[in-house]
Structures are given as structure tokens and as C-alpha cells.
Length: 229
Ligand SMILES: CCCCCCCC(=O)SCCNC(=O)CCNC(=O)[C@H](O)C(C)(C)COP(=O)(O)OP(=O)(O)OC[C@H]1O[C@@H](n2cnc3c(N)ncnc32)[C@H](O)[C@@H]1OP(=O)(O)O
Image (cartoon, rainbow, N blue to C red; front, side, top):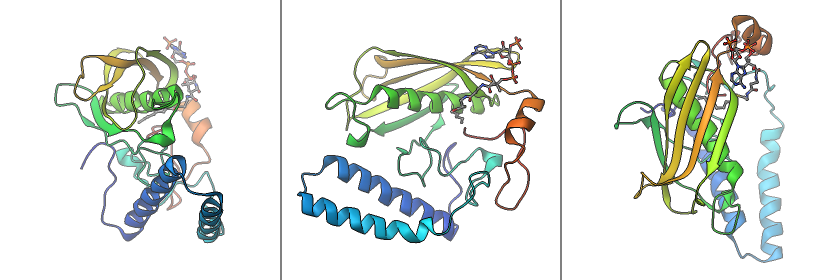
């Protein structure tokens, strides 16, 4: 089991992951197809028909999904690492065997395109925010992002396996500074993207105010550490 992988084995979680995978396939196909207008309309109608029964059973946004595991900071619909999310990669972050921090490998598809054939810069920032946040959590330093500095050295190619890594660089009171990179997996020392993030662990009063209304699926209040952002 990895840092971002939810416990498997429940029928609901397997189904959530299956739907997430189907959604990602659908997004990737929709951004890379040469289908005709008629074929696209037929697909849109099918997707709307499949969505209607789900939309008829809404979950209030301040009630966490039953498949989340807050104790292990697993959020199944997180837009970067969540196996149930249609927009997530999803990244599979693991402890970095090179020492300290976390690392993931992924090939990013056309649904994340910015300049033709390259990754959108905003997606790089999103991925780095999450990777660096997990590096903070791995060091037992959960916090909310208060600053994210991203340097784009070279464009990140699509459909090529890249390595995303982060490690804690400094700790100062409630502040944790984390650094990381995106690099081609076969040239990990040549950073395409460099990022530095500062995470601040909210004071207990602020955390209580922000998350007072949030409940787990079984109705328990969530306070303090609230997981993967
Ligand atoms: C696995 C996890 C992955 C997570 C990835 C995604 C994470 C997210 O998306 S989080 C969402 C985006 N971030 C936010 O919405 C946060 C918005 N900011 C806030 O709400 C508040 O600043 C909050 C709660 C973080 C801190 O508030 P509060 O508890 O009142 O702390 P506050 O007293 O203001 O500051 C605490 C310390 O941090 C410092 N600090 C605050 N902001 C900054 C900043 N931008 N840069 C540097 N230091 C800062 C303060 O100077 C203070 O330092 P000191 O103790 O030395 O005086």
C-alpha cells in the first residue's frame, strides 16, 4: 500500500475507482479523437444518460465520501491523486527511496495539454502543490498552502514518463517549506519544473472555524488535520 493509495477491497471503493478510470478514459478520448460531429453527439447523449442517476443521489459537499480515509490522509476524489476523480492523473506517490520526501511517476495525457504536445503550466503547478503537500505530510507536517513558487525551465512533454518529487527543505514553527521538481524519468537531474511551496498548519482556532461543519460519512466531526487538501 502506498501513501496515496486507498485501502482496496470494498465493493464501493472498487466501483468508485472503476468509474474514475472510465471518466479519465472518456476525457482522454474526448481530447484526442477525430470522431465526426454525429459520433460526438451520440457520445455526449450517452454520457448524459449515464450521469443522470448519479446526479439524482447527491452528497452534500460538507459530508465526506464514505470511501475517504482521513486517518491515512486518503481522499478518493482529490483532483490529483484520487482514484475516483475524472480529472486526477491519478498520481501514485510513494516514499522516495533516495532518501526523504515522496516521488511519483506518470505519463500525462492530452487532457492536460497547454502548448501543443506539452503540459499546461497550471497543471504543473497543481501537481507540484499536491506532491509537495504530500512530502510535508510524510514528514508529519500537514498544512495549507500559503505560497507556491513555480519555475518553468523547459516544457514538460506529454505521453513521456516524468518523475515528480518533493522533500521538506525547512521547518519553522507552523511553517514548512518544501521543494520539488518535475523531470523526465530518464533524466531525473535535469529539472523541467522547479517548485517551492510553503505550508502553514492552521492554528486550532482557525482549523475549528474552517472545518466546523465538515462531517465524515458516519457523522463524526472533522477537526485539525483534514488530509489531502
Ligand atoms: C497531501 C496534501 C496536499 C495538499 C495540496 C493542496 C493544498 C491546498 O490546496 S490548501 C488550499 C489553498 N490554501 C489556502 O486556502 C490557505 C489560505 N490561508 C489561510 O487560510 C491561512 O493563512 C492559514 C490557515 C494557512 C494560516 O492562518 P493562521 O492559522 O491564522 O496562521 P497565521 O497566524 O496567519 O500564520 C502562521 C504563521 O505562518 C506565517 N505565514 C502565513 N502566511 C504566510 C505566507 N504566505 N508565507 C510565509 N509565511 C506565512 C505567518 O507569518 C505566521 O508565522 P509566525 O508564527 O512566525 O508569526
